[in-house]
Image (cartoon, rainbow, N blue to C red):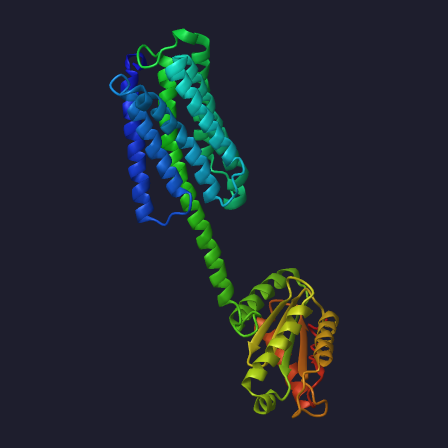
Length: 405
């Protein structure tokens, strides 16, 4: 069946396929968000379709149009594909000038083989070399940078690029082996027709893979945007600490985790002493600055990634300390108190230090079936209340003989 195919028909149908691909990509670019580089690919498909169509007119149009211009247009496709990939992946195509020069040399050799030393075999050889070289470069960029930028290989694109290179090399081999006996439009042979058909099918696969690439990038950006939204939802706007919502969620999650392993779970709860008086004396802007300064101390006092510092509300702060016993939690609390003292934020209405101080409560439990997250929170709150009751600027520990460390 393939032997019965006429090469003009194959090329004409290939041109129609490429024009259809162009229409699909143009519609996609209007219907969906596209990224830089997508238009390079669309131009490449227009070019290769136009080149294939001009070749079908060989014998009816001047050689410059049906041979020189047609072949340059076809070679422009892998050049634009590679350029588009570099732009899309936001990498610098350092070899672009080199490959542009290769295309320029190809044009000169094409003119030579068309007008001066007329040889179809020579023209096909140089075409196959340049065509496959450009697709290999597209393959290199795909393999090197797509996983880095998008997290995984696009195997469809890689497979199609390899298929086109293999098909082109087959055609190159036929041209070299047959020499001047090589024919193209007439009696072109089954293997040469198969190579052209493989190339056309490869173009379809490349179109699909490029649309998938665009969708992959869109999905990746959507995931990143969702992460940022989630981070903002969990963050206190004034201090950039975690907010009460996130604290409540993590209190429950860590409690359940430690309940299974019977490990210590501690909490440090602190309140800025005489903060209302501070606001009355220095103003609310200074009050916000003070809260941010204390928040920075809490943020820096968590020694592990599992330690969670949060703004509990107003001038109150908490720190969850998973896998930390009472001794370790007490050590964290003293470090926080010492850092606040060292900061020495002036507070003329405070007695007796005339600087900002904290009242701190510390509690520890070993989660089990008889305890709950609310119990740990209640114990820390009771310890903080005792600090306030005893004169502020101190640390109180809630003793719970059954479950304290």
